[in-house]
Image 1 (cartoon, rainbow, N blue to C red):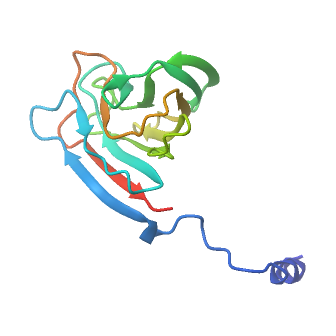
Image 2 (tube, rainbow, N blue to C red):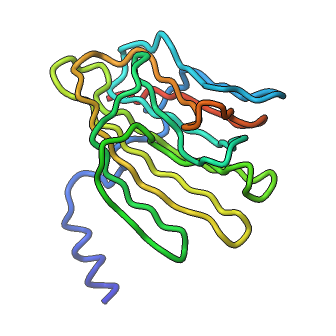
Length: 187
């Protein structure tokens, strides 16, 4: 079977490089939460010179709610959202109108455990179409944890010039050592 795959692969013209390479990513801004925590993280004055944006974060909350609210251009959109969630025991999926984009570990989870997420904001500067946002994230709390995938549609044609993340519970904050990074993806 292996020789056959090699023969078939030799028929492919061009190269098999990924769509985006590491040189396509440019760091725009990073934030690390200091002692005392932070009620929100904002990336402002985002230049419109990239094809897409990517937000990466390592995060822990001081609250017992694990959701993160997502603001675009200072607006908390209540957008069409599709999500898949699994915790090793149960899996769920659905569609709703909500503004939570990602999950974080909570104050009730194992100490010093952080969640990770990557959020892609596609065609963020294009003023001729609505914006699509997709997220992949999860965490492991020493034997239990969760994985989630979410997509959102922001029904606005305005170019995205700022992004803000905050714990879904208004009284919560991101814990010390949470780290956020914004990247521009060339296109």
